[in-house]
Image 1 (cartoon, rainbow, N blue to C red):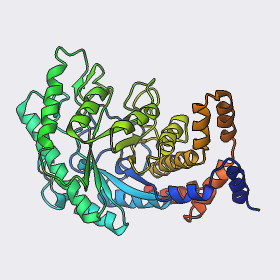
Image 2 (cartoon, rainbow, N blue to C red; image 1 turned 30 degrees about the horizontal axis):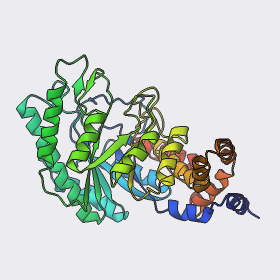
Image 3 (cartoon, helix red, strand yellow; image 1 turned 45 degrees about the vertical axis):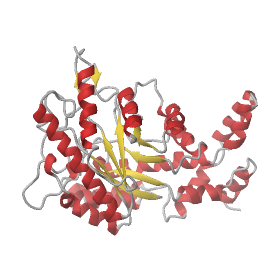
Image 4 (cartoon, rainbow, N blue to C red; image 1 turned 90 degrees about the vertical axis):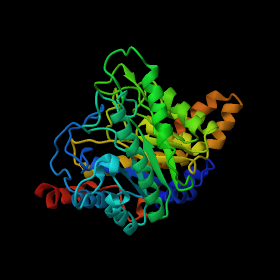
Length: 411
């Protein structure tokens, strides 16, 4: 008997079908962020990171051209199981001729990304880029009192809606386009209402751009604060959730964008009750929105459990969002996305129906006992079987180290 066969029997004793879990997981799509590969720099301008975004570290081998970034993505994806989408920011536009401003970007500036995605049978998700740009004035974009600034970014948002629909049409896979702005104030504002009113009106204007709602899912992402914007964030959780409800778009939660005592895993069930779909950016915040590489930690496990136990795999857009410049960037991608897959598999290998029954019957002692038993169940053997069926194994560092020596170290 193999280790997997033994594990299969153990899980079966709890009423869990490991084959069903493996088959389900291999069809779950995770949208993987491109910006881990180049420290969120992009290709459309050379402005320093701003908007409360910060990368730390200077590990060698960073991608500096579209070709290098695509090669690194390919390498990372070859070591990551499951279905994938590519998640792009608008700042990754590729210009063959004269560069266009963000207010004038067009689908043609992303044609090479479409070619890349189609060759790999995957879709593309998208994000307008409202940071690291000279037109971010006084830390404001869509909420600015300056008409010139606000109108510039409204045009950018509208352009991105068109590009998102282009991605969906070209790949045949719906595109999730996420709006997040860094707007806010370092110190206590005299007027909290007006910036939020301007943000609302700007989003209304952007969403007046026609688009096919069966192909493009617009999401709105909140944040609690950013570096240099500690006292007030225009796009707060209350604003973004309220606006998403009013506008009929999809709320997006990034688990680094809340107070450290708030848990996105606790919020998922509430949003599922009131939204057809929700979206997640999964990251790992250490004390603040630090965007550490995702690991197989408690909150990642709980997020996955809430998706799985509520039968919401087809209702939640799962994406990763982190960036670490202190370690090998390929390994950061692989470790982080594999951790999401681990968490989802772990959630599928829980006796969720039995545990719910124990909770409803107020059998809390037994519920605790079962929960603890599952922590030492042979999860690793099922994980290894999942990888093996996709031509992968649990050891990937040697392959990444080889790529670093042969490719990254020569940049």
